[in-house]
Image (tube, rainbow, N blue to C red; front, side, top):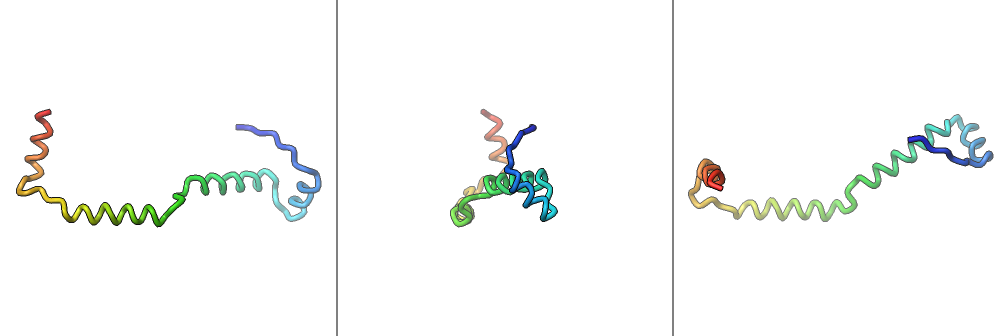
Length: 77
């Protein structure tokens, strides 16, 4: 995608005086924003959900059934 931006002359001059290329600067800013949107927002909630799943897994039993029995049962339908 190609965009056309209006950047004030003094802003462009300030960036160029620091040796920063405007196109590189804008690309880095956009990448930073994309990463911020993609990252999980609440790591504590995610960790709690994983802990609940692992805890429930401990109490799940097959009551003597074998995995092969479950596979065969699934094939019936």
